[in-house]
Picture (cartoon, rainbow, N blue to C red):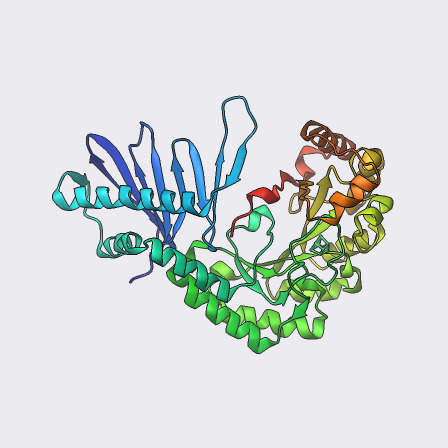
Length: 411
Ligand code: SF4
């Protein structure tokens, strides 16, 4: 199939209501019943369901087949939940039926487009209709052969292609994080990265072009020593040479980053690295110790300074509610001091991530043992405001400030 590379819209009417088919690199969106109770169905260019907007709720299918639904009742905060496998199957089936009914109406002349749909759009519609329950299950299985579970990405990187040049986290000590407990830390060899990228390309197919940028996984890809990192980054460059994938992004956690010098970051910048995301969590050394986060606030500051001197932007993640009531004051005060010293600018991002505690986390047990009262959502919100007012950025020099909700992560 010819790749869908341009953004083109085709308008039409069905049952006296307008509809629109929008094709774009890597996918297609069908919007039915526009100007009424709009229903929106988006698929990637392999026919995989991607997002649906139905009845005011947004559904997002992850490549591993699970589905997240988000909605907001008037005057209430946004809500979300993961669908059960049966519910996800039903949503996919209902969407497929809606597309099939519309395709049938087009073929029968009951629905009409203002200009004819080109053959590559018809072929994509066929792919969508044949992506049935069995294919959906098979696709999720193939995904699990290509990737180790991807625990988390920064919210501005959800549409990156993840390339796991390492697996796991080199620390795995933090009491609030269970993302990488299932695997030991491992640096891949260049030939493994080459094969991994080949498998990603074969798996994503034309759906690859839905994505922009590359995220180097897993938790701590930049901990790799330079002599091993550069050949891995060059494999990524060779395996994904398209301009859309020219920019690279990665996490650096636990502040092993202080060991890299500005010239190391400059060498990575030359090879496409643009921003490094740092799980700072807090500027308070006592809280970091309680969280068993490796490194000190000074290590984090030195790492950020080295990255910026090497020409990189940073994304700094602060953990709201960490340490509950006990640490709240020190958390705000020392985070303000540390983030101010980082001198973040408009190219940087300051993320606020709410602490989400699950019973399997060591944090849950330790907080109970220490008698720590968790902050309510309102108190976490107030904590964010207190940090922001302590930072008081001038408008023209503000970093991007955003929420980072790990419950909404979908790859
Ligand atoms: S360093 Fe980061 S990825 Fe590793 S355990 Fe801590 S929070 Fe999780």
